[in-house]
Every structure is written in structure tokens, then in C-alpha cells.
Image 1 (cartoon, rainbow, N blue to C red):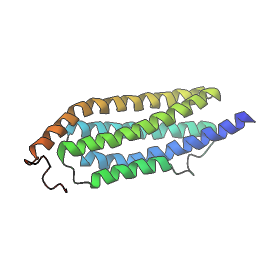
Image 2 (cartoon, rainbow, N blue to C red):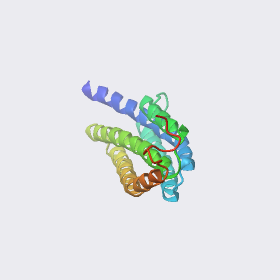
Image 3 (spheres, one colour):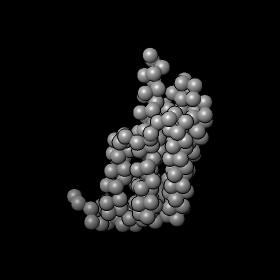
Image 4 (cartoon, helix red, strand yellow):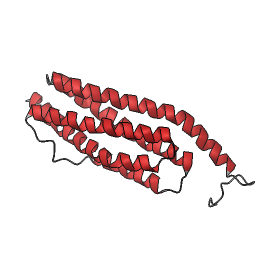
Length: 179
């Protein structure tokens, strides 16, 4: 009986991830467009292609399970994407916007790393070795993307700090800032 309950949880979480990945396929191009850094834009575009591959892997897993991938909305990813949209609506510019976008993207990656880690473990426990391998590959890609974002942040955050210094007034407040 526990095996069946874990299988239900596993399928439910796979549906959640499927919805999350499809939402990202729509959100990533908006993030790429908002960036001023060509390196960051290229990173987003590369991850968009990976994300499409993640959707395809999930479809393969659902086919092997004889399940449909639809029927669930990923509230967590919806919230993270909404936060990202709010960041893009702010009046940040240049490297500061890029730093904010990296922050939003890393929130996405950390959410996905947690989710893929869980479903891969459950696939192992359920004897779904092919699915486990596919989920492990996606998990590795998510971790790699997070590392790339960290490396970009090391450069872009410094640039953002320097660009902010140029706009400071003698009182130490950025122009246009409210007291």
C-alpha cells in the first residue's frame, strides 16, 4: 500500500514539474530580453533549449508510466515567476537589472534542484531506473545552470556595485531615490 501511495506522490510531483517547466519555457525569453549582458542573455537562451529538453524527458517518463502529464498547476513556480516579473517591472537598469535577474533565475534553479532531487530519489525507490536516469540528467543540468549563474553573478554584481557608485549624490543617496 505504501508503494502505491509513493507512486501517487511521484506522479503528482512529476505533473507539478511538467507544469513548472512549461511555464519556464514562456518566462525565460522575457528574462533574456530584459538583460543588458550578452553573456547572461546567451545563458538564458541556452537554458531555454535545455528546459525544452526537460519537458521532453518528462513526457517520455509519463509515456512509460502510461500517465498524462497534465492536470496540475505548479503554485511554487507560478510564485517564483511572478516575483521575477515584478523584478523586471522595477526601474533597475543595466548591470543592476542583470544582478536582479540572476537572483530570480537562481531561485528558479534552487526550486528545480529540490524538486528533481526528490522525484529522482522516488524513482529509484519505485524501481523506475530509466526515469531515474532521465531525472538525474535533468538534475545535473539544473545544478550546472545554477553554477553558471553564480559565475556570472561574480562579475555582474561587481559591475552593478560600480554602476551604482557613479549615480550617488554627495549625500550618498542615488539620484531619484526617495528619502
